[in-house]
Image 1 (cartoon, rainbow, N blue to C red):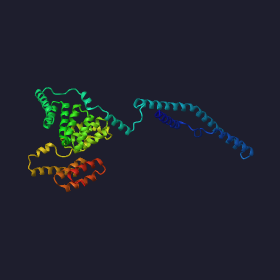
Image 2 (image 1 turned 135 degrees about the vertical axis):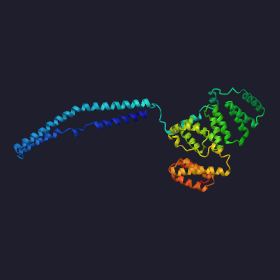
Image 3 (image 1 turned 180 degrees about the horizontal axis):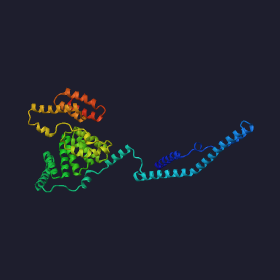
Image 4 (image 1 turned 90 degrees about the vertical axis):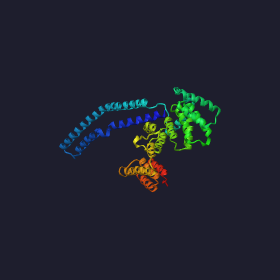
Length: 398
């Protein structure tokens, strides 16, 4: 009700302003007839006192009479135009009010309460906490087990029987995870991985929990359940740089109505990844849309670039002597340094150069580039974060 009161007052106020613009003020547009009549009486008095001759009085009377006639005609025109003024006002007021109401009813949300940002976030988080669990999600996914490999299916069944008698056989359960996931039996695979974690106890790594979460998510056809979220949180707690866990954490927030968090996680993950990281392709397929929903539209070419050599670069260097390997890296670094000096580059390019100098043991050069880059990107907090992470890796961040 309060909304309609305020909206009505605003519409009325707008119509009043329009009416004010159309209104003809009588003391500006209409001559004062009484003034001319008083002038005629004054002429009679001046003639009687002898201050004006008969000829002068008649000439003045004729001029005043002419003005009085014109004033009467102007008054008649103004009176006739008043009706048109009100018609014009109605022609303006009715469409303004009608179009405003139609627009709100068509595009607005009548009856909905105000939804401030913090309230919307609280509602989203409440919905996330109340989302379906793992079992519910799996029940909605059709069976995708590959039944074409009879030999693997038979081996998996025998392994399952053996493990019933050897519940603490770590290697056996790890083999079960591999076998079951190979058959696309993700539900059985994550349960076997859960047993692996129970056997490993405190020795379990972040990657082990990340694998559990990934198997649960695949079993739910990409959906991140509360149970998978718990596994992801533990993976990140044990290994904050684990790429798999960070990717799925971003996917979870994207699913749950928090694109702002998803975009932040994925943008940071890209900057920490190598060019051949398996999560880059699915991130790039979604991150532009997520950035728009997050209120920070960012084209892919403006995102941080992956750092470090790819697996192909590493493989190519395996057959080289240590001296040749250092020379290869030095040439790559020199080329990057020259390009930045002549053409400039993104914060990720500068970060790559800092990291590379650190790998070569050229800490003085790494520090000098870091200081220069901080000046170049002084007004960009995200770029400064990327540079700081590179300086940490190079061992030059004070």
